[in-house]
Length: 347
Image (cartoon, rainbow, N blue to C red; front, side):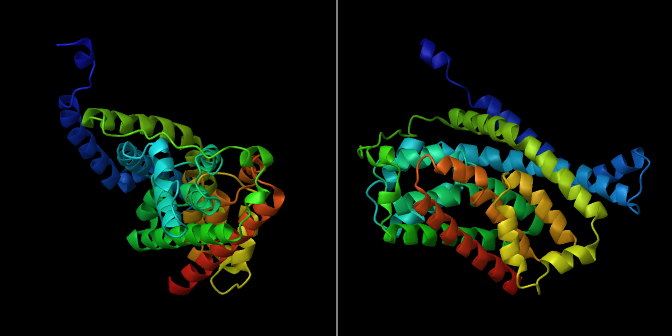
């Protein structure tokens, strides 16, 4: 037996450990309410008070969010072993508008970058010869329609809301990329980006991944993603707990209600200066909806935070000139407004 063979990860420990981990995950998720009730009682609080309700929200949502993140991120980490960045660039390079936009937006789902960390890959796509409009479809979809957002929406609001968000989010990414591509705005790329000659992307095949390696990649994905976003989760849940416990229901219903026509554009404008990811903003979304805010208005706020954040615009300024940035903001904001109104109309 060679040294290389002995260093290969073995499948047997995974076959023994995964069923145990999955069973513990299911048991913990099924008893979140019981655990939160026990914790509230141990603290001497009652949900009849503002403080007790806020603390209950925090103690219930924190393990719920972390369990959802851990499970879904692990699965997507395994799936991502089939989609190396080099292979992704190779798949998109040379694609026509339309087909390429749909592929780029779909690939954004399995690449869980925040808006700022998606920018380096955006530059890599351009350097590999991927058309500008197709690249923008990826840039929009990667932070906005990823496994974190979908997992949390599924757990909090059910499959109908998650599926509708998925469909409309992909539609925004595809149409926005098509519009930007048709406008032929390559001249508004920074000179150093335009000077990069389109080269042939290196293809990194996932064929050399064994299943133990794929499972290890999933575990590494959990360490990297959950390890990075858990502070956002705690901050988001903390703010959500304050809203849930202390903000009067009639206030949120009046400001972000279904019948307030200006609420959706106001939510988008409010969300742009902020910066967080789906893990940090969705607990706030849950609390706002629980206090009477309309679902479409609240999701428009969420989408603007994670797809049109001010820090992302500052990073993009290193790559794009202001006319292209303004076009990007205008097209995506229009799509988000339509999503908000559609959600308010149908749900």
